[in-house]
Every structure is written in structure tokens, then in C-alpha cells.
Image (cartoon, rainbow, N blue to C red; front, side):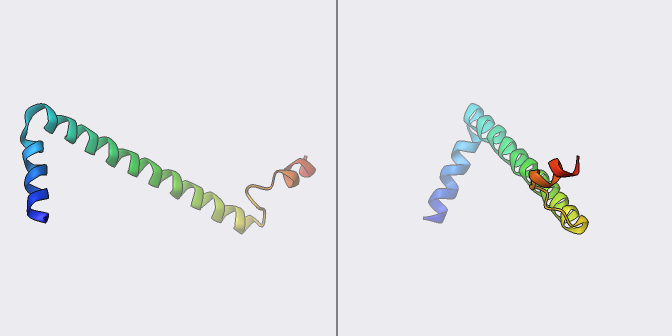
Length: 67
């Protein structure tokens, strides 16, 4: 089963137009995974910073009272 699947993917990848589409799709998928990873890392850093400051990052009512 694994050998058949590998050969089918290799066959599709070696075709000129389909191979380009698979390659472009793979690059776009990889970039989206990296982008979401960066966003989640920034959210984690922001949440950690808010915990250190002692305020809940998503608590809007406290921010209104501070003003």
C-alpha cells in the first residue's frame, strides 16, 4: 500500500503542470503553517506578559475602569 501510494504521488509530481500545482500548493501550505505558528507564538508571548503584569489580557472591563 505504501509503495503504491508513493509511486502514485511520484507519478503525479513528475507531470509538468500537475507537478507545479502540487509544488505551489505545498509551498502555500507550508507558509500558512509558519504564519499561524508565528501568530500563536505572539499570542503566547502576549498572554505571558499579561500574566506577569497581573492583568488578564482579555479583560475589557478593567481597562475601562482604569481610564
